Image (cartoon, rainbow over all chains, first blue to last red; front, side, top):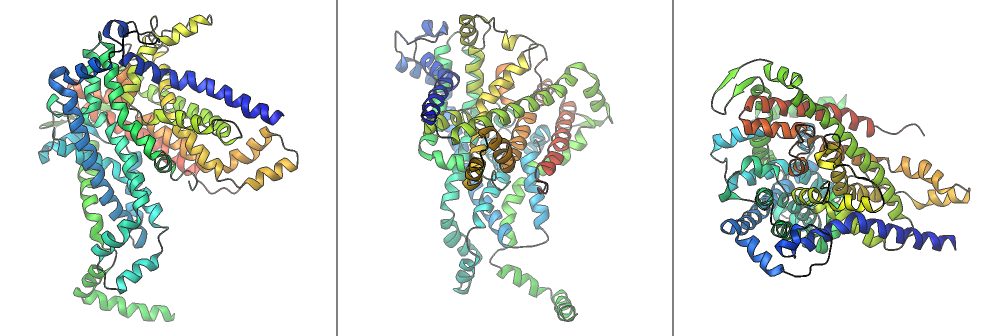
Length: 276
Length: 309
């Protein structure tokens, strides 16, 4: 009896509290996004009397010469290319690091931890990028994302690779497999599940990156979605429907990722919690 | 002794024959050059700037020319009130967000691992904000926290509470952003704690129950000590995030009103915008030192091998 009260009572209370704390703000955002301008600017939590989803959608996309479209294209390129590079390079490092014991290992482990902890030195990074001719280029930002994200990816890969039996590599080597074939044809396919995790976690975080494009990729021509949203914030102070439609649009990619890859995202982000 | 005599000659032989070890490493199934592409990118865009920051923090700098000015940037950083405020705020923000995330995350995790209904829904909705963009969350909550038109104060007025001015009140601005940070990040803490609690063998709880231990006793004597790696992870992760945080503060207050909610990361950006590159880089070095001085000893302490019972 008391168990049932606890099971339903606490459960219903928790549902009510999370509804107020988590669902209401999200719902508020979605509702403002589909209201017409006058109603939206009243900023009330109410059902829209006049649905203008399509109008708002078209207007926010075409604002400032289709800047949001450019931003979505740029952010997609940024996310896809950086994640692809991250997956391949991090898997290669993790593979050798986990399999080959050498005196370099302590140094490499130290550098990986440093990459997780140390805040990047922004202006010296701009200085280096300028020297390479990559400042204010998408290519430059892609390499930045790779440099800042690789530590985390290596840790995920290394933990997974330690569960692959070493006999497998030995068998492949005896069969005459070179290191490149061994890695890309034999090992890489075995990493599939951890690759999915890395792709999902990193693409959400790179899609949401704001500080890096703010420093390293300023300018309208190179707009990314987060930076565009930030600039719209000062521009759309009298058109909350458009501002919130923009937020709604950039929320959709992570939402879709979450719906399909819920398990992998949680697994990737909690990795290391149990082992410490 | 025998091992010594057998290894010594082979080592000497290898050293005298330079071609041999090269061919051996080329033949290894795990070649060192696999490190090379990652190392190149990491070294150029992370290590070099980090080392360069130590040098340029002692200069007045405009990216092309620099003049050595010694400790002046650091002196300015610790004497100017606006900059010093950023320093203390960084600590306050980091500590407040991580404490709240640890406490709330642990409570939610205990709740979500107990026998209640709708656990799947609760877990999903609590975790979802983690994936949202800080800028989007910041804008939505700036609207919700508006002193007069905001939904939060309207709701508080209904139950008779006169809500604070949140982001526009100097005394509340930093805390308000910290609360939103907790709203966004508590889901990550919760799933980490859940992973930690689930890994505790259920025999412990069953045995304790047999001996008549209360749920509170179970929590303090079983869950808390055995979920220690998860606690360590949450503390370290949220402190690293909290001390470095920039996005949410920049989207919500830009360090205002005045500079009452500035943190080091926003000071760095403001000095960069103003063209004080040397001073900004000095801020970066200060942030680096703070983060390492807090995180390294703390993680060594939290991850030390547990001996006492």
